[in-house]
Length: 181
Image (cartoon, rainbow, N blue to C red):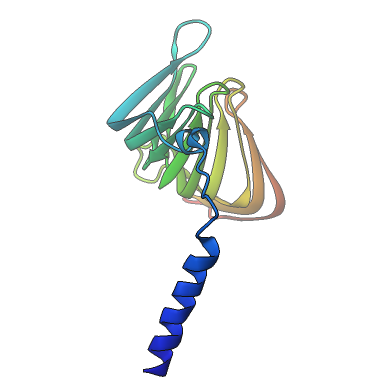
């Protein structure tokens, strides 16, 4: 009972102290944090300078924030096209797409699969990844695992140049290779 009375007195004291003070809400700050539109099961196609499809971004949900001109994506699913090769599929739990820079930051359970039609395709997994679509560059500072039917490589940090077909694991690289007959 005493605890209840003390609680009531504390609330009254707080209200009394704040009675003459105005709480200022800046409308522009609220508007900056509000999405101006959302998309359900959306698809966004990017083209290169030659007019060919560069990437296709799909997501279950996307919310666009106009102040930063970014879209927050739920379960993004990308196809990254490479000249005369099958596209790479990239999936994650969430992502943020910057439309001006054409970059996408992916978070949580990021998976890249090449040649997904194979029984054991080439696969890269990590927890976060940044894709710079204009320069076709991919990077992360997180742990990375790359596997296929005969090998597994692990490392911390990665840089990849998609058009050059070059991947660099930046530190703590370990690999296993099993030769098949």
